[in-house]
View (cartoon, helix red, strand yellow):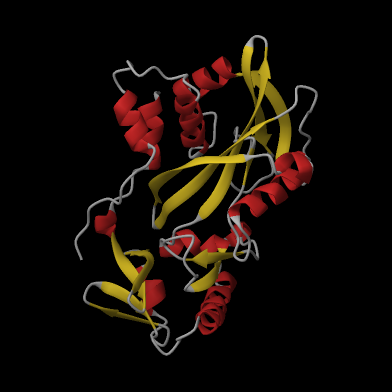
Length: 289
């Protein structure tokens, strides 16, 4: 393994297998050829023309679109789609987080429609005499996704109706028992992007990176059952684990690599330095409509 291997793993999408999905003139996502028959079965909701999918233009407000899409997704759920991944958590459908959402959609359905998801990912670290240390959580072994893998100190998807920093403060309390007055000190330091494909699902996602320097006498504690345990690791151990293994959840590696770059742990003389830094902000793969 290498840092570049993680970047390539996160950016394996082949957009030739997808067609864009539009809400009015705005592209909302992508639909895979294998998922297209499911969408095509809803002729009153979707139409297909010019090698693209279009939501019914009569749904001319976000509220109407959200209601119609939810009814459709609930039908799919009854048919066995999404299974244990259904969260009853609405994500905003928008290509840019600062723009108003075209509609809201159940989290579990977002990758099936190639919708961009957002979320805060925080690295909680401690400064000691022997250098930086990072709090590393292990995901609960009962989680439906990536059970038992290592994760970022605090991370979460971005539901509709809440800001990124506000969401991070909420997640800090839920996942790590970090009190709000401490969580508010987290600093947004950048973002990473990737285009990941898993079968017919597409994640063209943006993760906002936060750093939080924690007091030496503070210990995160699992709170909501999503984390099995926390361990404080020397940054060198985290560096080597990311570089040499797949122990961390696949996209969390990117957040940690970004941390290594920003904190001077990756040498500018490394022959892969430029490729690594460029790869953390992946561009949209080429495709033809």
